[in-house]
Image (cartoon, helix red, strand yellow):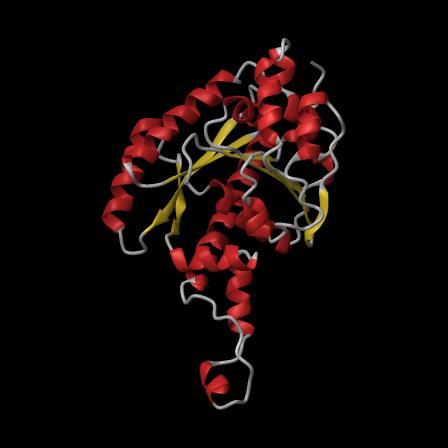
Amino acid sequence: MNLDREALTRVIAVINGKGGAGKTTITANVAGLLAHSGYRVLVVDLDPQGNLAEDFGYTGDPIDDQGRALAQALAFGQPAQPAVGVRNNLDVLIGGHHLDVAAASLAAAKDQVAARLSLATLLAPLAPEYDMVLIDCPPGIEALQTAAAAAARWALVPAKSDASSRKGLLDVARRLDAVVGLNPGLDLLGVVLFGTGSSAHRIKGEARDLIVEALGSETAVLRTTIRHSEATAHAARERGLLAHELDDESRKGPAWWQIRRGEATGTANSPRTAGGVADDFHSLTSEVVERITTAEQREEVTV
């Protein structure tokens, strides 16, 4: 197929075959920080659960079509129109339960090459308008995962430190290998440890070593780890805020003693861990940009 791969050089698939590995949270927070830094960002919610709606706060909003438009674009080749201005500089191709129908249609398609390249074909005319495109991949839906891998230049793989999550890396490797013929430029951006305890240094070290051993590369695992904070995760989704927005809200609010004295009106408290989680995502976003720009500079030199 005549596909402009040059337009897709900054497409990142956030992918892991196992659920609960942090794909949606990482996609939303990295995309939000990129947009906050001035990048033009497109987020593709390829998950039928549509949980990005909670992270970005548009659940129940008129723009939330539960993935109907994206499903039609994937299944029938219709042009896709992102929801514009979900954040400044950030647009979203909305996901949701209609993507189940698209997945079934792609899996049953007679032309499997076209089916696997459906997302790449959809994104090729859109991607040049953006500095970065991030795809939130679903767990366990082969047709949609394959379409994401076939569209991406980079794979960013969240993983937890438990053995089950690390096994998911093998599924990711197989998924990436399956599309190499269609997408020879696809490469691993890195594995990011997600949901770790801030003081669990030994566990993080062991998990990092096992992943490096499994993938055969010292640089496979990113330096940044994302700490676990149930309070921050809950508060962020309840309010439709990203970690750095939750942290900013906390900093701008009145001090407890001002509320106690009646000098200010109390607002919903942000968890004390919000600042630490926000710092982790700042670090991860910087590392993602660093790895991509370094690779691009290296490619320019070789050319």
